[in-house]
Length: 560
Image 1 (cartoon, helix red, strand yellow):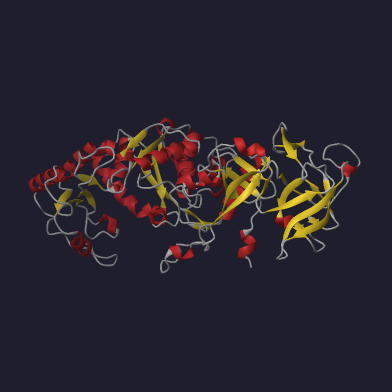
Image 2: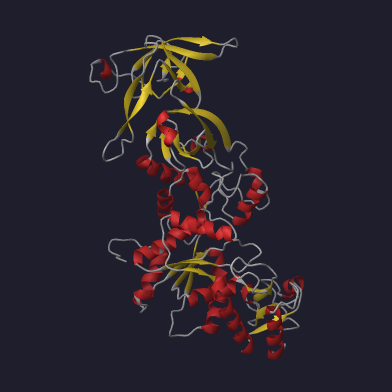
């Protein structure tokens, strides 16, 4: 990495210091180590960007390693989803690895620990072990089985492996100290009995390594140089190093664990357990519900990989946890979609507009730019006719002076079309306006170069020709939680803050060019926001998800 004129974060400083102290650059190797027990969320996205970003910066390999040590909660579905998410974010891993690749080696090392008198089989219940472990201010008590003979421990451990015992009857513990200040060092469990089908090893094993045992040793087997994890693993670092000390060969790279802070996002939860709860209790439609903070949910909503990477780079890496306002993510989304999303016409709350002096049977095609941000401007054809849909909010029968859209007696421009003037309205029996009638200036066509076309009017509104409009389902999403930190108060169930108005389903009308749109195609509905095509779309009916509005409205709401 070139450090010229570059401010390094503390993780990069650690790597640079290690290189200065003799670590060969070709020994750098990083990893992203998800557990396949759920779908990845935005917090994982930050970790992915960190580890794979370091790989790109240092031209070093990055492993994708699944820490699959708990078969009761892990599924192949999650493995496949994780791989898809990492690839979608734009990263490529060097090796696809699994902790289960190392089950035999981990077992063999555990046998060596027993032979060295550094591990023993404990036959207490979990409740008994919890009591004798003590408290942060009170030393623990040795297990009555702590001084079993090496021979008895080896025999019991092998019988555990062979499936001779029921779950919970025995565990293998490291023999460290029951008086350690760090309670994780008080003879931690290394193996537990589990008669569960594993997604890769099937029923080959009846015992499974604990995460703390498997994680650091897997790093070592893969020769990972730097193992980065979140701050809750800081107390685990001492145990990580103790385990490595038992098997480390100084001719090899010794992994170094270092911790960074979670960057929590407002109005969101990023706990896999809580996300699973939302799915199982039907608060959302699934892991990829567009309201979820999962990568698959964000992708379905229309959030781009580029915007997530930019968000991760913007918030950076820190040593202290903090709450990031979700409006920053929204900003990154808008910034990217503004560059790549074609502009189209759509009306979501329609009222009919009739141009009374436009010929009854006339239709014409008007030229509209696709995206003014493109280096080379391209255009499409929009059908125009006597009757149009406009947004109901774009007309007021009696308006205040700062209302610059359509009113009776005033002029506005129809985007890419003509200048019109409000003349009259038609109302139903209850007094609701059902039609707005107007006249148009035939010489004011946009781009025609006529004097009338150059006239300045105070407002421009969008429209769709009723004869050519395509009816679509539009899912308007809002934040899933009304509270900025829904799981911040442990005394309150986070589900109490679920926003009852997080989804509104409406029928809208779009221009006919969208009939060929495909899943995940992004568009800016002009003056309304950014939308993408949902996977529920069919050839008979398009479904659009609202990704984000054109501006932040929540900050105004919350400030009131």
